Amino acid sequence: MPSRTLLLLIVLTVAGLAACEDPASDAGPDAGFVDAAPLDATPADRGVQDAAPDSGADSGPSDSGILDADPADADPADADQADADPTDVDPADVDPTDADPPDTGAPDTGLRDDAGCPFPSGAIDDPTAVGLPSGVVLWLRGERGVATLPDGISVCRWEDVSGNGRHFLPATATLPSYQAAAVGGRPAVVFVTNSRLERPDVLGLGATQGRAIAVRSQIVDTTRRFGSLLQGNRGNNWEYLELEQNTFNTVGSRVGVYLTANAYDSDVATSTAARTHVYSITTMVTGTTLPGALSYAVDGVERTLTRTPGGNGPSGPGNNLVWDFSGANFTSIGETATPGFTGGAIGEVLVFDHPLTPQERAAVEAHLGR
Image (tube, rainbow, N blue to C red; front, top):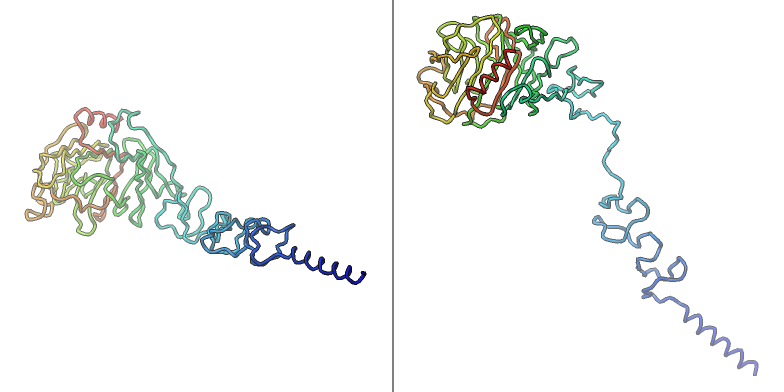
């Protein structure tokens, strides 16, 4: 009967359509690239796209392309939010090769920083190659590492060539000057009143550690104080350690030394000749009797030391004893605060982390006096 046949076809058609419908709980991927159910969260859906926006922790499937849906997302593929443009000029001017402390913030150009001082040369010398003992913590040489402003004279840095990087910078408005033939005809740095070089430490030496200082120098002014190397504290104005001429309250124009507020004259008068000074300290343990722990040689001859009336006076902290050195917080070269000082030249400075033996001292003197 035609009507029954038609009814059967309608029923079969409706049943087939129901079998093809995707319920909301569909857990598998659909045919083609389109999902029939909006609640389907299977990772395989939508190709490489993520089915849900990312959270800050990005714990879901990988994001599309190289961009992330969440700008706070820490996915390594995300674009850096910081300005990393290498052509930007940082107002703070933090060029790591710029060693000029008053750096004004202008961009550095060429081979000099914005204050006109050349970038550090990186020069390093081998002490043993020239016959020096080991244990060098500072080595300043007139022949190498003296940086000047474009005038070729004004010293803006004296580089440590020992490899320890303990460079010295100007600490006063008046700059010392470079001269090609100032100490026995050799290159040197020349100091006048208030033209010292300085660094804010004591060269890595321990408070009770023995040490030795060796200097090649030549002076023009023999009557005023001149410190080749000083370790002290600006706050209490004490000289904790110094190699000096005309120590405080000297009995006459003599070369001498300091240690923890004790000032000692040697038996050698000041002179305008080029000289080699080697000052060795066996120990700096508080309470050690002085000057027994000290050795001071001038031009290869050990000298007698006598405490001056100075050195903070008889009631001061010195009193012929070593006292606490830990308060020292700077090292300077060419300390010339005495008004009117007209000139002292330093050609070389060596500091060792131990007192020198007689053999080591002879090797240092031979090198400096060459």
